Image 1 (tube, helix red, strand yellow):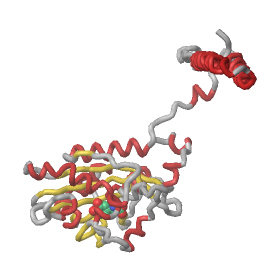
Image 2 (cartoon, protein in one colour):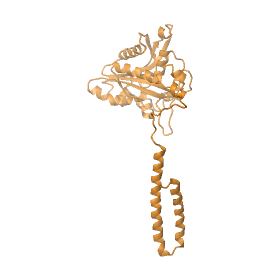
Image 3 (cartoon, helix red, strand yellow):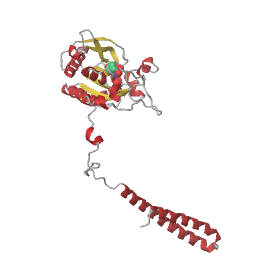
Image 4 (cartoon, helix red, strand yellow):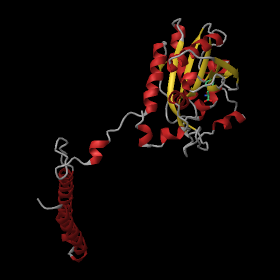
Length: 318
Ligand code: DAH
């Protein structure tokens, strides 16, 4: 079989034949033109086949079992670094496992969302300054990489509404990656992880929420903790609270350092209503907080930037 280059040369020569048509007697032109067209089509088909064949040769199967030593020695880069799981993924699994052990379903967040789920469905009034507080990125098409996992609340409520009809409760945890257009420093990243919790039933209370949060944090840190709340503001909860734990002595605390771990509150009636849940019949609470912060306290880390920096020395410590 001729090579692709040869066939292309033949095609080029053939194309020159077209110029001759105008010098032929009128009655011969059609038949001559047809003949060249046929030859051209055949050549083009041959070129396609020859190119496919050439590609097959180029991607000939790689023998991954072949010995990889160079001059009788294993290259260093192959023998030394095998890679490992990212610590945030390990801890995210731990967080998910704890919520599952407490009876929560898991629904994963997404990496691109929209104005409705980021703001409207969460009772942010149009044009309200609270919308600016989230430092959202936007794509040219108008999508929003979620600035918090609360973007999933509306979806959770709708997807699990049937639980209420069945006389049960909605209990869902939502881990996810979130993004904020913020200046980066040791305690702020533009990309980080959060986990959201959503609970709805006929008669739940803030007291139930605090019990759940205490249980979660005590399981995560493996010890009894002191907790407290302080007033907060979120358009999607009423009342809104910030939840704090006292830095445990085992993690370097001196008995007086309170750390804010997450935002929480009773789900605003408008948020329930928008998802088709009657707020006069049901009530709920929700919370959301950073995974990075949780992990930093567990391991005594002081620079959140290490998680996204692909620093092998840092990652190898886990
Ligand atoms: N999404 C809030 C944030 O990132 C945290 C939050 C507050 C989540 C209250 C909630 C909630 O679910 O009820 O700042």
